[in-house]
Length: 395
Image (cartoon, rainbow, N blue to C red; front, side, top):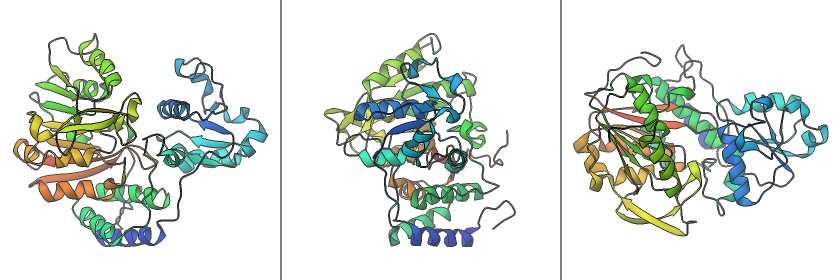
């Protein structure tokens, strides 16, 4: 353990062994009593739509700052109350789903417990119980760690470029395996720089070609425009959801977007092979390739598309590994910077980073957590010739 509290390689092995022996006991949570939500922000809004899709009612949404949201369009017809306003009987008898990922769960749940809330769980733990009805899967548990898991995790943790990556990887595994929130003083979770950490921002140039895989409504593409000062070559936004594509066109080609034709929208899924895949439309952030879907969409490999990207972001709701497998030749020939989410399913434990570490030569690999509850975990792969080796938090 170093002075900032981040374990060295030897200490990392001890943590992995701790997780291996403790993992497997946790279970998802069904809604088995009256339900209320905590948190009226973006995750709370997604939870509202999620429970609406399932037909599971909730009584109201609780928020530390209820006045901020009472007039919000998303909460019209829903009572937004402060924790102190919740009847004592509801604090005792209701299931409270915490819809906050910008703070540690314990930091949210402990004050609520002091107010008498007796059954408080992460929203994603509830969502994991209904995977047969809705594809959202951000609440997965590792289950028992196998020998292959231990070996794979050990390989990956030994090949991160910096100790911050190692610390964030352990934090990620701890939540997924035993719902423990590790908090290393030298490894802060950074919500505001997802995809654009200092190591990425420092290398951007005016001829960047940005591939936004899983573009949703264009939020990341617009952020890229802002960070680059609109000095870049082109944006390719890839999005298979037909509803998201409508908002994406407005974002990139409307009044706040580009007027010079500097962005292309490609309506396809990214996959291991080209063809078609079952895809669940209309779920916003949670639209995804899923066996629950009743429709299919075109799928293309990155190899086939052969977009001349210098920087690729992949946020594919669990299909990241398939997309990378379908792009090995492209990755090695184009050598783009890669920022890929790895928190949507169990492949994020080690399979996705191990895949890239074994197939990309002369790359630097970093891992950063940008949210709590085991979410917002992003793998960064940077060609060594572009890596500037700056310290985390630098300019």
